[in-house]
Length: 201
Image: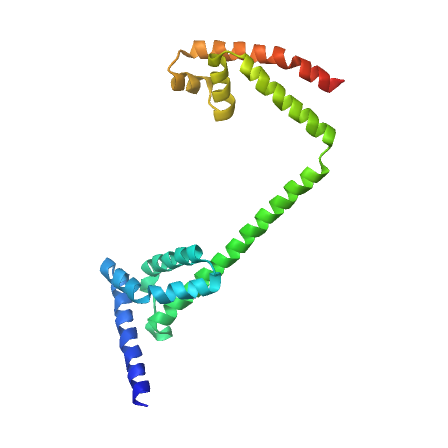
């Protein structure tokens, strides 16, 4: 019986200390936030891990909870519950939100995988063959350009830079870059014309 009373008294003392920490946190005391974290983070992490079944996610939720404590300490009302109960309520809410968000993300990824699988299964073999040949033709045509021409084309189309941005990147005059791109495009058009004619037959 005595042990039970001692336990209750110990809990009251602990909650009183935690309430004092929350009050200090509300006044911007960073040391109080650190002490509050040291005394309660094990329980917060344990609850988050129990809900999420994922250690990295539980660690992230734990950090989120204390960020929320830092922001909302001023709204804590002792009349509505003990500090530890308030803290675990925040944890439970954050962990459940994270679990729902993760589930939605997994569902979206599964849907995308299903769409890609369906596309692969329903793709026209002839179209796939044409696309492969065209891709090879483009790669071959690019190799036929001079290194300088190939460089500006790759920057223009893969990096998406404008002519003036390419000139600045290469440290060359804008006119030189424009002429090089124009010559490269003319050569590519001539090299790829047989492929386009094959596609029309």
